Image (cartoon, rainbow, N blue to C red; front, side, top):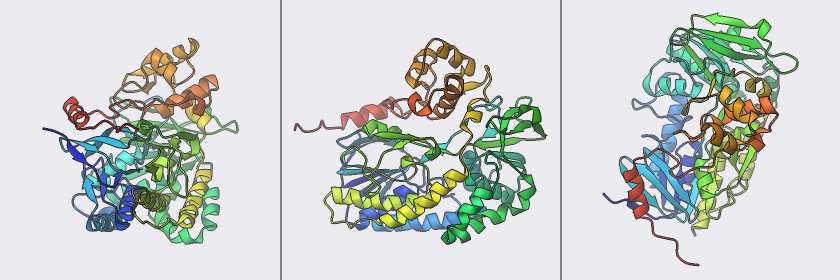
Length: 467
């Protein structure tokens, strides 16, 4: 079977809020648009679409997403589901596998809307069965109606914990504790008070978790999880004045069958790196993210635009606004007479996101201090904190050095899961700035795909024309 060759004006990578918004804007400007999404149905984490339709505690978001997806389809955007993008370069050319077939795309412009994924700081017991991210638990509930456990502890930081807590409670879970690293909700409430346009949204967020108010624990971290073959207990400790956990004041929560823990989200920059886009670092924005011109969504690579969480974690509203800007810019680059995007709406949405970042700034030093010598930092290659500490003693000081000494980040995830924890651990142990620690460069193929798909996609690629 040979690869399917696709040309067209614009290719959007990612079918979440930013990608859908970009695809619709570009198509309405007259561009031919192909959208590649990793999942069977577009929507991303925010607009996730279960096969059975809108139901349960997230039905408002599901219906909003379904309406947007229908507009995208009706406009004539061609959607390729279950598409793994494993290669790209700045001609622009994209290689993907979708539904067992190879795709080679040569659009005039690209919009990267690859989103983000949960990030977790390693701690003793984090690899036990029953420990998962809030995003994974939400996916189980929203897509399949499956509970991650009956007696759960939610932990980490950010408003997403409240979203998931409300959904789990509505689904029938007993939410034992909500362990929030932020010292109190005061800064959040003060910030919301300055944005009256978001009061109704805040009320919808807070109402489902109001009955759980007595179960919130602010200014605390999960320091360990334990159990016989799976998680059964969770230890939490308050943060001291020095920003580190006070283990002498720790408490243990017994009878737990699921611990859902995440310290926000991390932009997925692998495809952007393959294109050669410049990457910036801001820990509060999720870490490494794509550098863009806000007014156009343009990256540093001609013809490649970006929007949404890949440009810095900010939430659905900035993603929708930024996606429209990037989609219109991509259409103009492809030669279509598109209008300018609404930068004011984007900036206003982003202002609220920046307030949330300030309200939920993580205690990075404390998170980096949690792992003991036996704690796995890299699951794929089973590299422990002790192994990494030995590499530090030998002189390793960045992601490349740690990878050479220990193989950390060399497994199937290519550092997507372990990079955050490795950076925090090295910062705590050796005083290394996580920005200076760097990140694994993207390798081809960026995702695990059958070699037959890789060979077919490459065989369909025509070499770039000589200048």
